[in-house]
Amino acid sequence: MKLTVNNPNLSLIMPVGCNAKCSFCYWESGHGLTLERFSFICNTLPPVFKQISITGGEPTLSPDLFNYLKTARNRFDKVVLNTNGHHVKKEYIDLVDYINISRHHYYDKENYDVFNTESVPDYEELKEICKSGKVTLNCFLPSDFTDYSFIERYIMIAKLLGSRVAFRKYYSDLDILPVDHDDTLIDYHSCGACLHRRHLIHGVHTTFKYQVQETCEQMDGIYELIIQPNGDLTFDWAGKNKLEYKEV
Image (cartoon, rainbow, N blue to C red; front, top):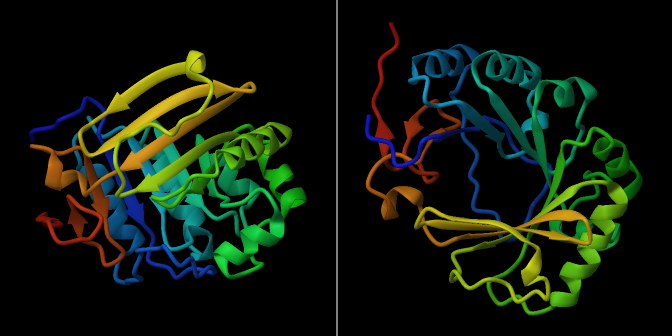
């Protein structure tokens, strides 16, 4: 198996719906994946796959999430849960290394408007989750974003919460967001299809992420594999490039 990175990622799209209706979301629901099939894939992949990201839809809507997390914890060195914060239980937090919580505005009302629901955590509920020290708040920015004072305010709220921050732009260029903190650069990484740049701003670990296309369309080899909600294992998030495997 030809790998383009030393530590490729496995992503799991849980076979569940979502409590939110974000206008920019590309996700489509699907069903068919079982815990047994997930366990088979985990134990069949080569040892070089040491980390997994679990996402959805909204994974906390699954009544089997605890068992999926427990299976992942027993197989992978690093387990990441991606959620909008809905119904995050302590038992989930205990099983993961990191929690990425989508939070698209620092004010509750504006955040509800983006999600088109109030079934995501408010500031006080978020504060309780952040006490774990495992949380990164993820904020989606449109490709034409220009309000850079928003970034400063968002980071300061994250500092009060005790969380890290990641700002993400999809299918944009690779220009770095113009922030007045160039001397705070920690590291910079680009795989060709995405770019990460981490800063320490006001004492908060802040990452700027850009994704320009499907990884498999840009790279010669495997950077990430995705378990689709129907149980397919693919090279791409769209689920068009399937990796065949057989259960025995």
